[in-house]
Length: 123
Image (cartoon, rainbow, N blue to C red; front, top):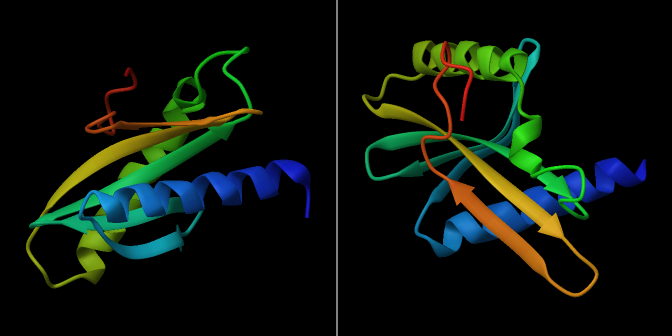
């Protein structure tokens, strides 16, 4: 496995642990909907949260969340539509980002709720 894949998996695991500690129930990880992959689908209350996790070893080249582009946002929106069609439950949907910077001496996790809406491509 490539190092960037291992780093991504580690970041996602840290993000899952972070969300669980905040009271979220993890519904699925790495769920594919056609060409879209959702890193984490979580539930809190009556809200389903689609989470994109971005992990880096530093923020030297920018914050990890800045790498989410309009194509990814569009795919996440389509995935949410498919999830909604596949599910009989009633819920609201939110799109979050978790930024993980795993440094040499410490790890920083930032949870950005309502980070974006499909159709709106700015943070």
